[in-house]
Length: 183
Image 1 (cartoon, helix red, strand yellow):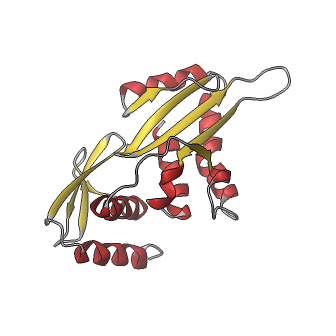
Image 2: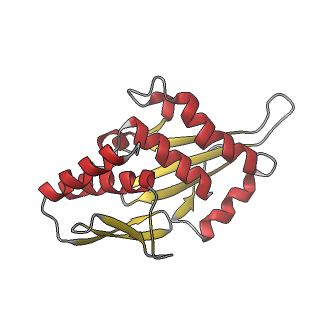
């Protein structure tokens, strides 16, 4: 019930743009089919309805894509550097950064294995880095650092500064958590 209002509004906003009835969008390693008439989003990989929080992300992305995605700036910003994120950092860190450190902290080079299953490429920066193409025009950079004698392992996500023209802060937290779970 917590997502009902946001989902309803997103479907209504999408209908106002009068797109074709059946749309598809790629998100990470899956493609999703949107049926505007039935107000349903299906994962084509497993032919099931998507969870509400994923539906909201897909709908918000598609709304912006139809209107026109912003050009990538090339400026990578951490979550803290994005505007309007005060009060969200703890949730973001718990959902996105901590799972990455838990999974790859002892062997950060293992992050390269995701290149075989996600739309991602290597990035030079940190000890190991990859850029994940979450949606078309929405890259997310993940950097990892090995532990040393002074510090434990660390990780961070970076977003092209244009992301704030596509998603609100809550959406960015959810997106980061989904990406972390996919790694």
